[in-house]
Amino acid sequence: MKLARFDEGRIGVVTDKGIVDVTQACGFDPADWPPVGPTRLISEFERLRPALQQAAEEGQPSPLDSVQLRTPIPWPNKVVAFPVNYHAHGAEMGAGYRATNQGFFLKPNSSLSGAGEPVVLPDLPGREVHHESELAIVIGKTARNVPRAKWRDHVFGYACLLDMVVRGREERVARKAYDTFCPVGPWITTADEVPDPTRLRMQLWVDGELRQDANTQNLVLDIPGMIEMASAVMTLYPGDIIATGTPEGVGPVVAGNKIRIAIDHCGEMTVNVVRGEGGRAAMFDEPYEFVRKAQAAS
Ligand code: MN
Image (cartoon, rainbow, N blue to C red; front, top):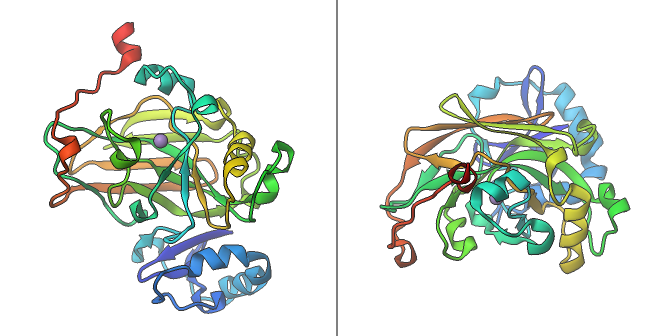
């Protein structure tokens, strides 16, 4: 099933004929604040699935381009992210570590946005904001101390994710925390529709230029390993999102660009980059020049 969130927080099932509004069958009010309905929907999905399926079959599909796609899970417990998890990206960054020995960080939930929303650039002279294309794992069942062999039991589904970042040497979380710096979408594809998540091609274009092209089989710390590592430290809850790391080819975006990301079985989304108001912060006053280490060395 392809589960989308759209317009004012409504829930839709995406079919070949378009998107069908199944909000009624989800049992929550899209206007609720905080918007924890989608988080609860995932935790109760097995019970709700037949009703959602029926609503999707009986409802009237609307064209996908007639709705505004929002981030599928606006209020998860956390967004976990693994840095430097493809060797070639580690090389281009000149990083002497990998996710296997560095571990993970967290992105704030407030950075989440959707396929139909722009990435809003802060006003930071002398700084580049880069795209990082990543596969998102959505947790389906509470996970603590999960052994590798049991990883599948805890996965709800997958999605495309952009881990946007201000390049620099400051605290990683601060550089990746701006609002709209974590687009997720276009929807969540449930795990049963992704035959082998360890072999998914992932591509990213900026204004039609292919910049990133990789396969999840090249992850340094693989998907079972990420769930094992994260759940060894903290409880993973239904709706939690894991950003699995970006391959080589990261680079700057500027206002007016269109970022397109596509992942096998997960669909694709194109988000507009716009210039926002404000966002200046003292730690970013010093300019920073990004130099691709792998190229500089060759
Ligand atoms: Mn990343």
